[in-house]
Image 1 (tube, rainbow, N blue to C red):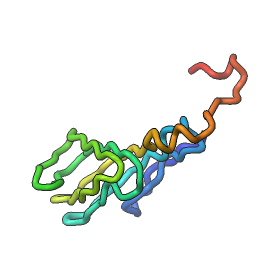
Image 2: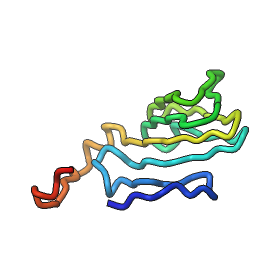
Image 3: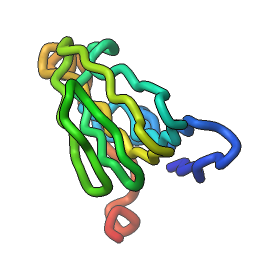
Length: 116
């Protein structure tokens, strides 16, 4: 499995992609938004969970702060806008209409190496 470290010089880093996860999960991403920078949710056709790791943001008039979680169903668009520098972690998963058509992702490790 490849796991990346967030790039502090960029506002977006992909930490893990679908090929490394179960079929339902598309990606796990790290975001650093500048004040007033927005992140559109719901326009990728995936469900999204966004965790505010630090900072303050707003989504549709609701104030978010460190520790807040936003759950955004697929196809329900909204824009999360940073009020201060805001660091986010997002997990994007496919809806059942997609995952029901995907082959299962089954680890191919020997059983003795499959446990942590």
